Length: 428
Length: 168
Ligand code: FES
Ligand SMILES: [Fe+2]
Image (cartoon, rainbow over all chains, first blue to last red):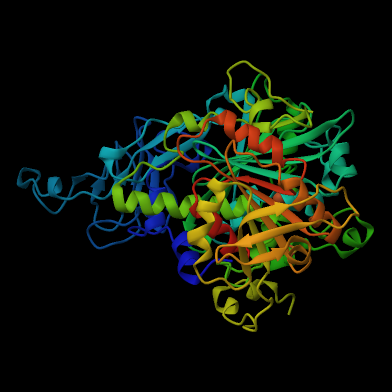
C-alpha cells in the first residue's frame, strides 16, 4: 500500500516534478534507430515524460530532438520540410536546425539577426545499439553514455522493439520485478514459446510453484533472487536485476537470448515498454530474429504501421476463453508481452495503490518504490546523483543457475551477475 | 456494443472504483534477533501501528523440534513479556530483524513456532553503513533456511517502509 501522495509522487514525471527530475538524470531510450533511417527522412513526434518533442535527422545525418512546436505561432513542426540541414515550418517558413536554433525567419532580413534570438528547447540524441537515446536533464549534469550490455554488443547480437502501453510507467515496471507472477500468468508459455522452450531450467519452474525470494540492494538498484528446489542439495536460482529507474532484466533460459525491458514514461498515463533480446557471445539466428519480429517471447504483434499492440484494450486483448479453460494460456491472452500489458493496463491508467494489499513476496516492489522515493528526495534536497546514472551500474546481467543450499546468490552468482565482454551468460 | 473494455481503462472510469475497504490491518509480529536490531526497533515501535507488535528480545528455555511446545518468551519495549507461541498464533506474518553478522540463531525457535502455526516468516537483515559483505553473507546464510522472504534492507527506514506497505 502507498499513500495517495506517495503514489502521485512516484507516478508523475512531467517537468519540475521530483520523479521527473529523477528521470531527467539518466539517458533514456527515445526512439528506435529505424524510425529515423536516413538523412532528411520524415520527422517523428515523440512524447517523453510529458514533453512533446520532435525527432529528426538533418541532411548531414545529424540527429536532433527539439520542442515539437514552431516558435512563431505554435504549429507542429511535424508538418515541416526536412531539407538543407534544418526543418522548415510550412506555415510561414521559419527554419530550425537539430539544436533547435532558428536559422531563418523569411519575413526578416538576415542582417537583422532576428533568427539568432529564437531557439527551441532541444535535447541531445545519440545512437547506440539500434536505439536513439536522449538525456533531458540539465546540460551541465549530462552523464557518460549508457553501457547496458544489450545496447553495446555488436548489432547482429541484439534486437529491440518497443510497444505502447496505455498505463503509468510504474505499474508496468513493477511487473518487471514481480517475480512471483511468472508461475501463474506465463505458465503456458515456458513450453510453447520458441524463445523460452526447451531450457533445462524450465522443469524447476514447473515442479516448484512456491519459490522463496531474496531481495538484495545493488549499487544501481536491486537484485531479486527467486529460488526453487532442485536435486542434490541445490537450489535453482533466477536472478532479476533492476537498474534505476526503469531497466529490468529477465533471467535467461538455456541458450536463448537474454531479454528484458526499459519502461519509459510518455506521460502520466502512458509509457513505452521497450523489449530487448541479445546474446552476449553470438549473433542472433535468423529463426530467433523472425520469432521476435513475429511477436514471440517478450515482443508483440502490432496494429500495422504503429507501435500499438494488435491485441489491445479496444478488442479485449483478443481474449480467448477456450484457451484459458484448456490451460493453453493461464489468462486467456496470448503472448508474454500482452499477458503482462493487458493486466497492467486493466489496473487503470494510474493504479490506485491505496487499495492494494501486498504480501511479503512483494518485497522487491516495496524496496524498488522506497529506493525511487529516496533517490528523488536526495536529488531534490542535496543534488545527490541517483543510483543507476553511473554506467558501471549498467554492467549487470540476469542469471539462472544452480547453487548449493548454503551459498548466497550474491556470492555464488557474483561473476554470473557481471556483464563481461566475450563471456557467455550463466544459465540453465 | 462490441466491448466495454476500452472504456473501463480510462482515467474517468478509474474514478468509479468501489471505495469500500477491501481488507483489515495485518497483525505483524516484529522480533529483533540481536541487540543491534533491538536498538533499531525501539524508535519504530513508538510510532502508531494498526496491527504491528514489536519485541526487542527473546528468552527460551529449551530448543525444541517441531511438534513440541516451546518455552519461549518475547519482551516488548515496555518490558511486557509475552509467550512466543501465542504471539505467533495470533500473527498474520512474522518478521525477524537481524543486524549484519550478529548471532541470529534464535531464528530457529521462531521458525519452529511459525511452522507449527503455518505463518510466513520474513527475514530482514539491516546492515550499518560500515558492515562488510561477509557479515551480510553470514546473516543470509543463517536466516535462509527459515525465511520465505529474505531481504537485505538499504537502511533502517526500510523496516517502516515495509511494514506500512504490508498494512501492519
Ligand atoms: S492475484 Fe495478484 S493482482 Fe490479483
Ligand atoms: Fe510478466
